[in-house]
Image (cartoon, rainbow, N blue to C red):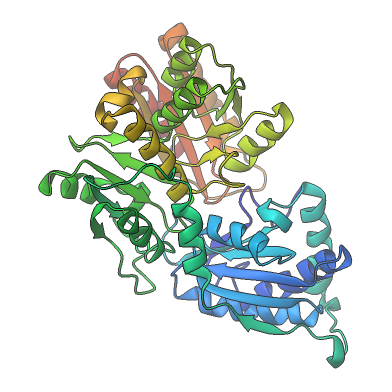
Length: 446
């Protein structure tokens, strides 16, 4: 069992263990020891716009250098951009300093293997073993002649922008489309507006002025109100929302209605099917039942993985399928990107709409979502008590499941990145879903 790595790297509150400069340095050293032994000579490091990124970047650089691994720094860049450039610059591994959609006072460290792939469980386990050695005082340093060197790559954002643009087929253009883009004051604040405007869109860019503490602050893929309002105010054709590290995508149609990851995944699957794709689709335990039903109508197989794009990717590799994603906006289209990439996913959706000559509002009508309520309940971890296993919570869940019967479902899970329990209830009726979720949430806090 992993001690420090969660479902998406190491993450926590800045200044508190493990998000301290000392820990980051030791993590860099441990990763350098493991990856260096596998032949890694250079690691590419990118980050989002959090103020703490400077501190953690310097600490990681010191740790890798002490282990004899060179570092290439690219500055603020989306997570999928780092994954892509890790391959383009022939770096042997990549690191992203980001807490994705979390508030600015959180941060995290994600490590990619060569080609932008996430580390294997065995690699993470070995890194944790060396990390424990460092924490216990056993961190060493290679000789001065073997220390890793550092360099900065100044044109990284431009290279990634061109890569994204190439994912809109050459015979298509965004000319005539008015698009609102919300960059969440995050890593894509320069890249995203450049991509859409250079492809011809009339662009309204919002939340593109990061100051180190406003990332994800009432904006981006997790806070869509301002995007909806801006789309309506400017009578735009659609809106695009990214999260802090631009691996999540949410969209808004011309009526100001949110189009979530499940609906976008259905659009991509429908288009792929029309183009001859014969595989299936991987969702998660949180995927709306309406997605499963819509895919059945297309005669496309559907599997549910554990929540997290890491597990979706695992299922895609196991099945050989190419499409997967989550309702939260992590979308995987492996024919176009090696990891979840919100900008590229949005261009694939736009490509579908342009080639079909339709609007986002009309295209999504092929899928009927069941009302789904999600409540996040914060908890304090106690070694001897699992809040999901208490008699009170178990009784509440049993009562709700009896009431829903075959027309709904309940899912409780702990977040892999925050001390939260996510209570999800799906039902035919929205009021029933809300009431049932509140009943379970109440049992969790009492």
